[in-house]
Length: 206
Image (cartoon, rainbow, N blue to C red):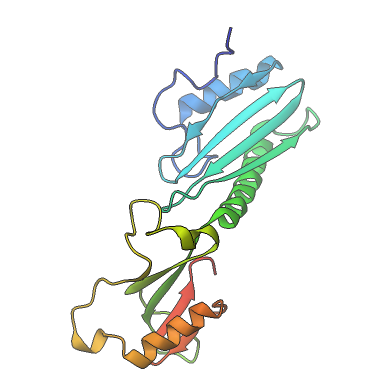
């Protein structure tokens, strides 16, 4: 007989924002399970505001917390953290801390699994810094096995290269020199934000 999952019958998303902001009924169910000192498995629960899911398991006093993330390109990442701690530690605080660690691991895994590199292009801020004032264009570059894909995965972007939008004025258009300069910068691996004429380009991953 399959084990009953702790959150299985609660319905809806488990957390409002992130994975640690559990809704009251989920928090109550988790607290009750913790106090029994027995084994439990929450099953996967979703975040309402993020493309992410979490899971909390206890087996023979060992906690196993997992985070699963995705993005607009359906790139998945998984992070798992296992731990034990003395009884005097605040269990919920410790679980939340480890969930955040698992999320960081999942996000790193997502980046490693990505078949694209994304860039934002906008007007240069009126300062001496290389800083983007707004976001007018995106550029999507295939990487790894992404070069074998006809178009980016997911439902948000439908072609590789420039994604145009929000251009209404003639003076908001890129010159050929600016565009080719950015494309060469991308082909050379990008790096720190760079300025081309009136524009700044930067990687989505920083």
